Image 1 (cartoon, rainbow, N blue to C red):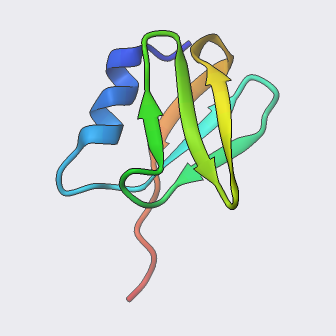
Image 2: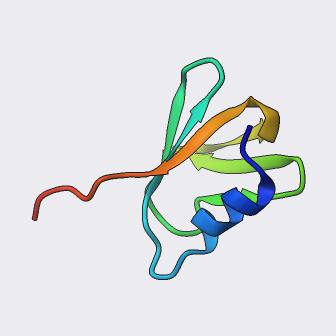
Length: 71
């Protein structure tokens, strides 16, 4: 499980670096722009297309930075 502090490190990093969230179901969500995710004590909100996803922290397996794409 990922802690709220670990998520906040990714969310508030400046300059922002895109990251991938992997859920316990195997589903992944990419956060590619700043202000697309908001961390709370027990949940994370991610903007996905035209809606928001509310995710309990205990469902998050890991968070890792995305590799930069070629120029």
